[in-house]
Amino acid sequence: MIQNDNVNQVKLKVCTRCVYDERVASISFDEDGVCNYCRQIDSLVEQYGTGEKKGEEKFRRIVEEIKRVGKGNKYDCIIGVSGGTDSSYMLYMAKKWGLRPLAVHYDNTWNTSIATENIRKVLGALNIDLFTHVVDNKESDDIFKSFFLADVAEIEAATDLALAEVMYRAAWKYKIKYVFEGHSFTTEGITPVGRNYFDGKYIKCIHKKFGKLSMKTYPLMTFSRFMFWIMFARIRKIRPFWYVAYNKEEARAFLEKEYDWKYYGGHHLENRMTAFYHGIYAPQKFNTDFRNNTLSALVRNGKISREEAWKEYNTPPVTEDDLLEYFKKRLNLSDREYKKVMSRNPKSWYEYPTYKKRFEILRPLFKVLAYANLVPMSFYLKYCFPVDKK
Image (tube, rainbow, N blue to C red; front, side, top):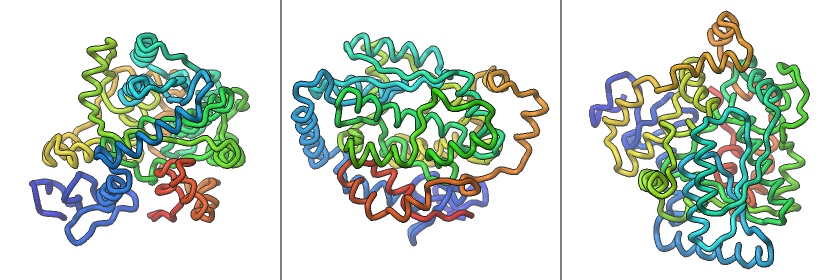
């Protein structure tokens, strides 16, 4: 147990710099007690020049290239939108950078009304067009329910992968070569793969075993489609906030003032399935609380102390009063069925078929593709290396 900063109320080894503890997947600590994830952040800041002149210049060159490649097209980049802070602010920044974005949204039919209104307000004010793929609600619920019945943590995996596929499809349709994603490793870290894995084979296998409906409207990204997008279509994934300075709190205040944008209560809570995953499912069944990602980032950035972060991390997540009942009703689960699943022993993604081993074998290729922005660097770091399955 690390004895410092009063972050020693439980017998856990905790990073001396953030609030990641020994329960985090594949964590290790150096001689100073600093975890490997903090060191990873340091390495990425150095590599990308995040928030520094070097990073700003790198991104300026990317913007110039986007304008050159997109000349003559109606749009020159794609921005995935959810109604959340990061994607909403990126829409504003894209226009400020002189780009012509097309907003893309994957509607898994679990959006909050706040998120839907946020998208409408920002897009309307900025005069940005929207491309939306709406999955059949019964089909979407069947996929979610299959993951719940499989006893694995990644109940939201289908949404994350579908958004990526829909953005690729929109880019192909409109001859766009660049896709922007709103992720910022400095404000939210890079979530360890332990309870956060997804790929097309995993989703297809889980649904085939536990689902009842056919996948007709769900945009599944198979391995072959993934390789088509990155090798043949050569659509590049760019995360601007990996290069430029970004302050989430300031961005939120700006959106509220300029667009009457509304805050939805917490990171990733703009969608009710995501809120269930983060606030109920992961903490109660898997003893996993993803708030440590954002809290650790706040500590690293000097926004709050480790004591404050640790205290918040050890309080129950806040959720809507009717969220659990809404989940059970949507998935047609009785109280008894729900309790039965929640009381069963958890399973992990590696107990089901995935593309993970294939990604590891192709690690040298994906390294090249990551440095060329043809796959996200986070994909290479998380998916292309063996992981500790303890």
